[in-house]
Amino acid sequence: MSTTLDAARPPGARLLRTAGPGRFTRRALTCWSALALAVATPVALATPASAAAPAYLGAVGNVQELSNRTGQPLATHAYAQFSSQVPEGRMITVRTSANWRQVAAAGPGSALYNDIVRWARTIKARPNPVMFAYHHEPEASGSGRHGTAADFIAAYRRVVSIFRAEGVQNVEFTWQMTEYAFRVPASDARSAGRWYPGDGYVDNVGADAYNWSDCGHGKNRWVELSTMADPVVAFARAHGKRASLPEFAADPDSRRAQWLQNAHQYLAAHAGEITAAFYFHRGPTNPANQDCSWALTTQTEFKAYGNMARDTSRFRP
Image (cartoon, rainbow, N blue to C red; front, side, top):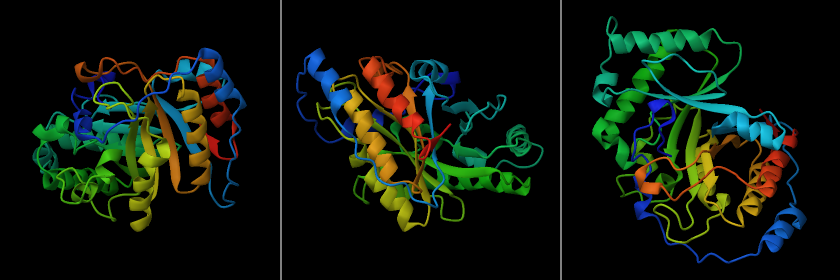
């Protein structure tokens, strides 16, 4: 999702979804019927896999507010530039103003190389594991100025190689795409396979998943998280990798609390395969989607997300 968060995410990063499939017509629910649906509908959760560690559950944006409203601690997914200080977070996504060919060619003594080394050493010194992603959503139109798919792969590999040369052991290298990249035909320039850095450079296959409904570039179709995440899990499984949702959210709707409950069920059913999920608790992020307000707002929505966080057999901050 394109955002002004730390000025690290240029506008237009989500324009990819203009080509998305159609949307179903929204059903109107009264406030009372929506409340009954969100509270009374049971969620039949799968039995957690005995060998699977709980998945990280958190947020992007106003993490503290969401934590306060749910009454639960949440993991943070932070964004930054290589030229900035290294933020704290369970997951960190970084990019640079340099194009991908410049990143791939970054050599000892250059400012960019020194910044990458500084990041590697800072993260290495931290006691906890970190999910680390370089340049999220490279296939989206907002990233086009940085180069081609081949250029991205070379840059991604260069960053990973520098981290490894510094002996960083506590990083899970996460490749962060849009979920749509896993659903388009292989012939499409945005297809995930065209942007994959390779099994030797990826630990976790990440995808940003948005239920646009009738906002932004949406076409009035309500999409469950399972529909978006299934192709991502399939890709990860085919490559012997784990999967994650570095960003996920739904447009405001009387069904959003139920959507979160369904997401809870889906993530629980994929324990061990989907290892992290971060709700995009933010408002509109660029001129292309000013009518999209992803942040949760109602008590039933906060309760639904809080119930996920309280499910400590499956989730952890």
